[in-house]
Image 1 (tube, rainbow, N blue to C red):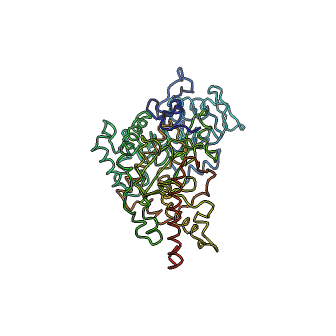
Image 2 (tube, rainbow, N blue to C red; image 1 turned 45 degrees about the horizontal axis):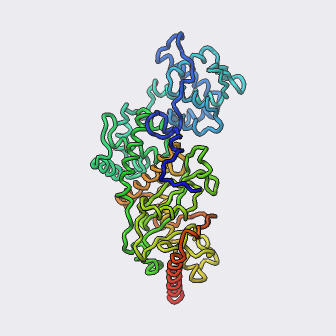
Image 3 (cartoon, helix red, strand yellow; image 1 turned 180 degrees about the vertical axis):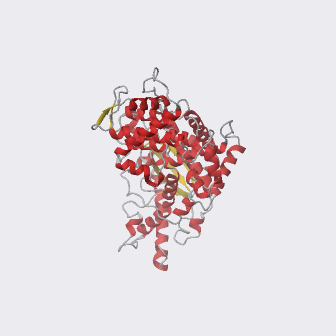
Length: 527
C-alpha cells in the first residue's frame, strides 16, 4: 500500500542520524560513544615532544613491515591527514565495529594515543609475530594490517603537527581554508563549492539580504554555505568537514541544518511554473515546431537512494531491489526544475505518484492551462495534459541506430521526436546528480532531512542556471542525449484516468503524429 510522504514519517523519528546538532557525530551516522580505552592514571606522563617522537618511531617501525605502505609514505612526499585516514577506515570492508571506534579514538583522543605508545614501549604489542596480535586494550584481538592503519594514522598526524612539515595550516575558525578558496583560481572554487565563485557570492548575498542566514561570532555566512556545499557536493562525512573547517561536530551539524532550511525556503521562488509561450527549444526547430507548440515541459520520476529503518524497508525497495525514495520532477526544456515532490517510497509506481499529486491541492502542482501539456514516458498514462509515447513502438534513441535507423511510420517518427524532447529531464537529472553526489548514495540522515536535501539541491540547480548560463556542467550536457535504461516493468494503472481523458489525449497524439509524418514524407524533413 502506498504511503502519503507528506505525512510525518515514523522512520525519521527513529533514525539517530538526523543531523539536528544534538550529537556531534550525527552527520556521520554514528552515535556518540564512550571512550573505548582505559584510563592512563598512574602512568608517568610524557612530554609532548617525547610522546610525538615515540609515535613517529612506532609509525616508522610498523610501516617498514609493509612494503606497500612504506612506498606510499615515501612517494612524492605524500602527507597523510585525519580525513584521509578516516576515509580509508570508512571504505574498509568487514572492519569490526570495535576496531573502527578504537581507530577513531586513537585518531582523536590524546589519552588513547598515549596509551598506544605506552603499550608499544612496554613491548605489549608484538607487531612482528604472527597474523593476530593482542593489544591488551579491553582484550581486543586486532589484525596486523588494521592496527598498522591505526598506528600510521596517529603517527602521521603527530608527525606532521610536531615536525611542522609543509602543508595547509588552518586557523581555529577555519578562515585559512576559506581564504585559500577566496584567493584561489576559479577551478578550485568550482570544485569545492560545485559552482562558480561569482555564483557562490551571489548566493551568499541573497541569503544575507533576506535574513535567511546570519553571521555568527565564529562563522560567517560564506563559511556556513561552504560547509553545506562541501557536504552535499562531495558527500563528505562530518568528521572530514570538522578537520577541513576546524569546527566541532555540533557546529558543523547546526550550520548544515540552518543552510538546508534557508535554501529550502527559496523553493517557491526558484521552482516556478513554466511560461505559457512556446519554448524556444521547440519554436526554432523544424523537427518540433509546430507539432509540439503547446508542450510546456517534461515530467518523470527519479529514484534517489534512501537510508530507511528496517521496519519500513519493504515499502522503499524498488523493482531493482534498492532502497530509494521516488521523486516526481517536472522541468522546462531550458533544464530548470518546475516542480519537485520527493519522499514517496521506491515501490510506488510513477503513475500513482503523479495521480496523488494531482489529487492533492496542498502539493501546489502548477495548473495546466487548457490545451497545454507535459511530455511523459511510458510509465505514465496518456491522458489530458500529459502525452505519453505510443505503446509497443520503438522509442529509445538507441532503437533508431544502425541499418533500421529511419522511422517507418507515423508512430515511430512521433516516438523518436518525443524521446528527443523528453531527454531534457534526463539531462536535468544528470547535471543534478553530478553536481551533488550525495544524491547518488543513501546519506544517513533522518528521512525528512533526506527529502529536504533533494529540494535544496533543485533550488541550487535552478539558481546556478539563472545566474551562470555558461556553467560547466550545463555546457557538458548541451545538445547531448543522455542514455536511459530500457522501459521499466511498471505499468500505468488504467483506472487512474477516465475514458474521456484518454480519448482527448489519444486524439491529440494521433493528430500530431499524422501532421509530422506527412511533412516528413512530402518534404523529407530532418527527422
